[in-house]
Length: 285
Ligand code: SAM
Image 1 (cartoon, rainbow, N blue to C red):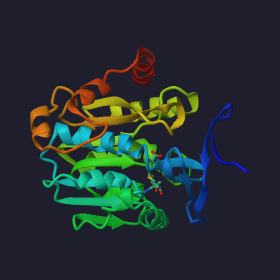
Image 2: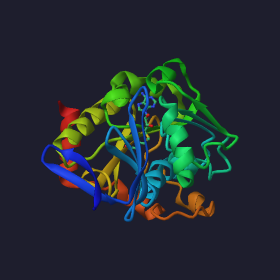
Image 3: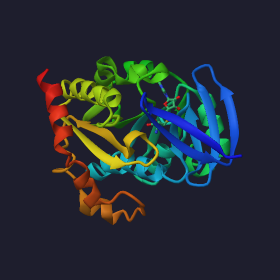
Image 4: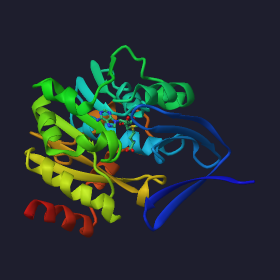
């Protein structure tokens, strides 16, 4: 008998992965947590039935969320990561010797425990000595921070359940305050194609664009996320992500990557017209 995991991407679209077995299932105080093993994507983590990471395609997501800001300012030293309990974002950050401290704020300790146990290639750097993990709501954590971080990365779930507050204007305003004068914010920005996601994309761009001097959006492929095309936001008080890309410096670091390179970096900010129009409309309304 075949076993399949199915996620509803919209009311009318479903995405299925053939699975060999279910490895873990539990309900934390915040969400349902499952890990499956599959022939095509290796092991994968789902929260409340939504795919968060798979062993085989996670490099696309984690390289693009980390190396884009790091190549704009390779001098980044103090980083705040919100969400990201699977550990992939922290793993990429620990590849930079120049980073001195990584505060990670994850609301759900069970996600971290499960990922350390079952997804060690992703979570394996959460014990790096520069990493401080806080099991708190990121929305509350950032309220008390002022002028502390060079980079804030919001690696959150979608805007439902515990992740809802991480898409609000109040939250992005507190991220602005938590950043130094040359700070960068990178955030999970949903997908532009399906309306339920693009409505959030538009609202998020409006919120961030009303706070930050520079607010751009960039795209990348991800086979297991709805539509296979995903966005991150890049916002800064000072840096333009393309004009201020320090390609020579980043390439001199000789960090081996499978998806990111400095040409992809520039190309990722070139958006299709329907996405540009939707983002522009957010700034007019
Ligand atoms: N790459 C994933 C994606 O885009 O769907 C996100 C990965 S990571 C597993 C997301 C994490 O954000 C989850 O572990 C979840 O517990 C955490 N999270 C959700 N809301 C949060 C909040 N308010 N504060 C801190 N962490 C939160």
